[in-house]
Length: 305
Image (tube, rainbow, N blue to C red; front, top):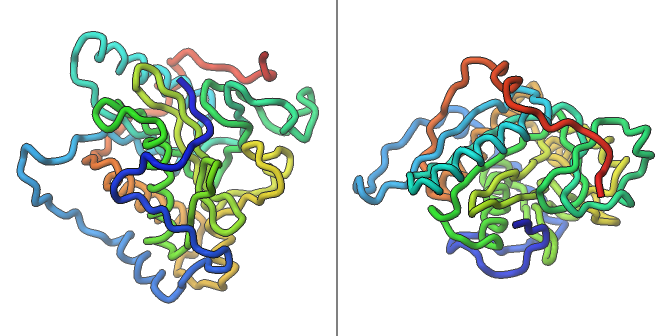
């Protein structure tokens, strides 16, 4: 089951539907304080009764790592198979979240067309993967945070429109609360925008109500590779990143390296994801990235018809 084009409605009760004018980008006076809150925030105890606390979600934090796309894709599918097996056995199926960065790569959705590639497939600047997600071609690379929520939508809401709007809401809240960037949706399109610039792309796949793939947020991403495609098949619109938007308002945010901005954004994404989906996030460590090599890999290749 694939969905690539949303429609209005089906919003969670707290989802933002405000679309500010394009000229309103940010309010820099509060950002340094908010950065400090994110970097030095203390865990807060829940006041909910035990039987009303949110469900838990394991999080694999690889946000500082560059993971080959094929490895991450195979890992997702392996987790989905495990969760489907749990459902078939009538066992509890918890949620999983993976956050990482990728080496440069282009990915295409199930029904993506090659007309949105501005290069010859035989001379591609980066590997190309055709996946089972919805949507058209996009780029992943360093400086872009990719979130792969592998969620059992039976535990949330079995509604794909709601799920897409909820993923958008996570990003909108991060951009607003952490960076004072007025982000918004655009009717008929999936993703998150600031003015005419798309900051986050979203593409999902659902199997037996287990959702995977997810969202990609441009933080410090080199935007040049987007010039070699028509991102998400959307003509006449730009792609942007957080770093450049902050630079446009000459904002002195206090971070000296791109890695600091990546860290701040990651912490904010986890916090807002937890709130939007009402999940308690607990971090799960992996002994070594070598385990990814043990999963049968999905190799890149030409677009397949």
